[in-house]
Length: 631
Image (cartoon, rainbow, N blue to C red; front, side, top):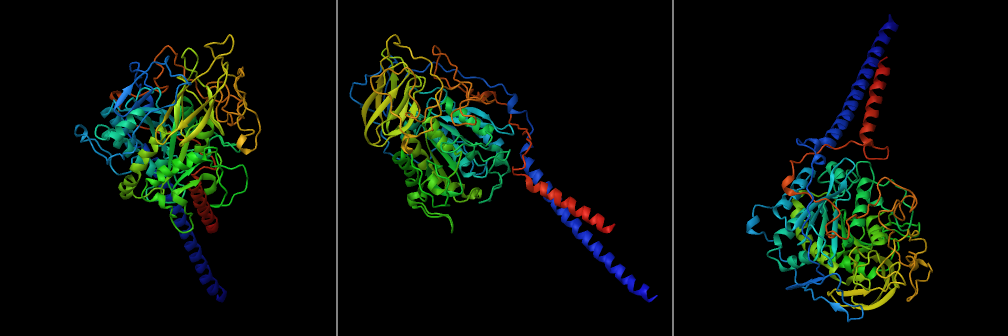
């Protein structure tokens, strides 16, 4: 009986401990299951739309009448010449006096569109699409809307053209671009692009600077390169990675072919779309908008060395370092805070004058700005717009006031330097001629109209021009402050090849021995007939013919393997109106209500999404442990 009296309280105490432990385990399990449910609901909340998918729409293709070929247009006067009457390269260098000294006026709205506006808030995919459609409908003579592709989950990557010639390339005038929201949780740039679109179209009639800019430039704006990531990012989150990656867990700014190192990451739909976009449209200048710092960063982002000291790496300098510093300073010096170069918080770096070389800040492989520069000859600067990645919407008016002027001034820099045409003796344009400015080994090439542009600072330069089947030429020219130099170059064909340029063959990988890193390789001598394109160790930066059944140089399998997403050729015949863009423009009057049903991809184990899976595992483990403990 004594033993019985002792054991009874013990058993009772054991049962109480077991019950308490089970209750605690059950509560913990339920909490984790609740977290899982919240993650799922918040990740899918953007699917609550109620109309037919955009993918089922049949957009109308706009075919505007053939535009008159306009070589240059200065403020207050317009003159035109046909393609077959270019000026001789032996004539004195010409300059177009483009007055860029006036600042654009503060935003003003035409009375005819007084009910058109954009709120200072964060616009989800549905709202962003509606705003772009509304803008295209309200301003059909200044805007055009097209999609360069779709995200992993099927959202359109919308691009809006803002220009006096939105549907046609203006021959002799540059195309420029802004790309925002590459990291889905860096949201300020996305909203700044919507406000920039609104500002440009509503100021065209009242602001002479904006009128000049749109009359002489085609501005392409991609507000969100990562719409899937934005939908799961959260306002008020200044740090962290939720929403940074695409729906498959890839960082899009580590997903491009790299100049210095092989990039083995699987190409993503968003980056493939951008690569195809920049292969179809030759952009002169570009800005990539990010968040998490306050600085303008310029190439190179990567470095040939493998050592890495955070915030203390040596700069990786391009041959155009002076131009890139100037472009970065153009943005930072027009920004009321960025030019101070102050750190965002303790432990983060300061930046002299608000600019930095990308690799000096921190090296990265597979960045977009290096790809734009090396593969396509497009000058791109990365602009970090806010210390907080996704600040409260109440701060958006401040960010717009700070960035309005630098956003506009930066685009105008496309009109600095040299621009012109390469033609044969009969005045026919030579497409894909290879050009480089002597001592600046990263090259560029002509468009199908024979056009070229290069941003340069004032000085004396020599332009080397190569084209297969023609004798190469070197032409001296001068660049003056803020006046683009117009330079036309005529190439003489070899015997039996007058007026004919043979099809270019595939070129070797362009970056095996870059000249500025010690590569030797003599250029083609002047006066020697070019029977094939010069090696790209001499004219770095030009890609092979677009549309070949191979990868672009430096991509996975560089130049040898076929891939599903090929760079596509522009198939417009030369007898047609060639200045119609290679993309389908959407007729603003034909849009159905916005809807979207995202595709749900299989998320790899390395992708964001492991916390909910961990929650399931922990909750299940707790419940099983409780069950066996009771037994």
